[in-house]
Image (cartoon, rainbow, N blue to C red; front, side, top):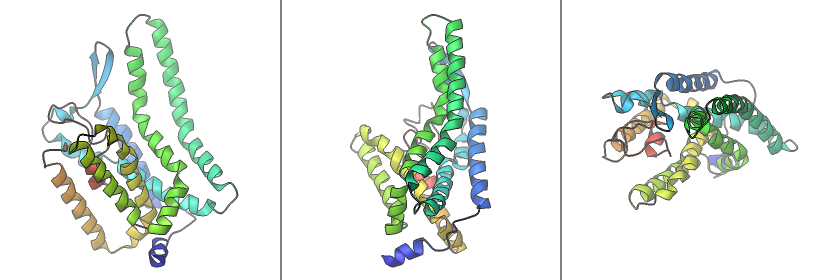
Length: 275
C-alpha cells in the first residue's frame, strides 16, 4: 500500500499553473454558457416560462451532447486544482478554514451578485404585474437553476481534506469505488424501484469525476495507449449503456416522450462513461 501512496503522488507540482487545465476549465465554462444560450427554448405555459431544448425533437441531435456535455471535465479540473492548493496549504495553521473561505469567496461572490440582480428584477416585475400569476417566480427560478452545480461543487470543496486523505491511502481505487457506488444506486433505482436513492448519485458521480483530478499528473505521464484504452472503454460503455433500452442517449434532459428521465438529474452511469 505504501507503493500505491508513493505512486499516487509522483510528479505532482505544487506551484505554477497548468496551461492544459486552464484551457479545460475555460472551455468547459464557456461551453456551458453558450449551450444554455443556443440550445434553450422558452415555452410559455399558464404558469409562466418553461425551459426546453431541440434535442428531443430533432433526430440524431443527441449526439452533440456526447461532445458538448463538458460538466464532468469541469469537476475533473476542479479536483486537480483543489489537490494542488490543498497540498500547499494543509500543513499551515487553520488550513481547512482558510482554504474553504478562499474557495467559497471565489465561487459565491459572483453567484450572489447574479442572485441579487435577478431577485431585484423579479421583485420589480411582481410589483409591476400584481395578481395571482406565478410567471415571475418561475422566471427567477429558470434563470437561477443553472447554478445548481455550485451546491455540489462547494460540498466537494468543503470536504477536500477527506478526499485528499482517501487518495493518499487508496489512490485510484477511490474513484473506482465511487463508480461502483453509483452503479449500485442505479441498480437500486431502476431494478428495485427505490427512486428515493437516486439523488445519492449527485454526490457519487460528481465526486468520482472530481477525484480523477487527484490523478491528473499520473494520467498525463501515462503511456499514450493507456489514454487510448480509457477512451475506448468509456466510449464502449457509453454506447452499451445508452442502447440497452434503459438510459436515454442524450446527456442532457429533454422533454421527448422516449426519454423517461434525464441522465443529468440526478446523474447516472452514462455520465461517468462520458467522463
